[in-house]
Length: 349
Ligand SMILES: Cc1cc2nc3c(=O)[nH]c(=O)nc-3n(C[C@H](O)[C@H](O)[C@H](O)COP(=O)(O)O)c2cc1C
Image 1 (cartoon, rainbow, N blue to C red):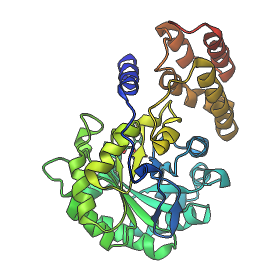
Image 2 (spheres, rainbow, N blue to C red; image 1 turned 180 degrees about the vertical axis):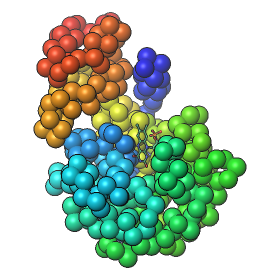
Image 3 (cartoon, rainbow, N blue to C red; image 1 turned 90 degrees about the vertical axis):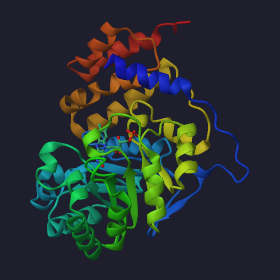
C-alpha cells in the first residue's frame, strides 16, 4: 500500500502545466456518443466495487463529462437480484451516466440493457476487458476478445433492444500475441457499437507496465466512432499527450481519480494538479462518506471507505500508524475522529 501511495504522490508531483493551445484546450470541448451530448472529454472509467452512485455523483460534481458504473452482472440483473437492480439506478445528479454490463449471452445482455435504459442509463457498455479468471472462464470480460463473433452478437442484440447507444470497453487482447485490437474493434462497431473505450494493456498484463497508446492510435484509425482512451491518464499533461498521440475523442480516468476527484476539473481546465490541504481533503472525504453511508448503510460504508483513506492522503505526510488506524477503523465515526485530528495538525514544512 505504501509503495502504491508513493507512486501516486510521485505522479502528482511530476505533473506540470501543459502548453497553451491556439485552438483551445482539447479536453474541454464537448463531444457525442450517438445522440448523447457530453460536455467535455474527460470520462470517469468503470471501476468494479467502487463506481457506485455516490462515487459517480462525486465524479460529476468534480467535472467528469460522463460517468460509468461499476461492471454489473447481466444475469443477476435479469434474474431480478435486488442488490444488482439497485446498482443500475441512476440519479438525475449523476447524469450523463452509462451502465457497464458483464455477460456472454446476447439475449441476457439485451434484456439487461433494457433494464439499464429504463433505470436511466444514457448508454450501456459491454465489458470486454475484465481479466479476472472467474469471469474469463465463463467466456465474458476479456475472453470475448478471443471470440469477437460472440462479442459482435452481444452488441448487435443490445443495439436492437435499446434506443440508447451501446458502447464496448476492450483491452488490446487477452495476450499481446493474440491481440487484434483494430480488427476486433471494427467488428464491434459494424455490429452497432457507438463508441469504443480502449485500455491498451493485454488482459494477461492486468494493470502492470505502462499503457501503450500506439495501440489506441491503431484503433482510432480503424473505426469511425469515438474512441475513449483509458490507461495512465492522471493529469492534464498525460491526458493531452494521449489525445495528441492517438487522436482519441476523449480520455477516461480510473486509478488517477481515486482519492483525487479534483483531477477531472483540472484536466478539463488544462491546469496542473493542485495539492489540496488536509482540511479540504477531510471535508471532501466526509461529504463523500455521508453520501456513501446514505447509499450503502453505515456498516458497509465504513468498510467501503477504508480503501479510500490512503488514496486521499497520498499527498500528505501521514504516518503509517495513523493510516493503519484509519484502514482498520470499525466505524465512520472512529475514522472521522482520526481525520479531524490530523486535519487540525499544522502541515509539515
Ligand atoms: C479497482 C479497479 C476496478 C476496475 N473495474 C473495472 C470494471 O468494472 N470495468 C472495466 O471495464 N474496467 C475496470 N477497470 C479498468 C479501468 O476502467 C481502466 O481501464 C484501467 O484501470 C486503466 O486505466 P487507469 O490507468 O486510469 O487506471 C478497473 C480498474 C481498477 C484499478
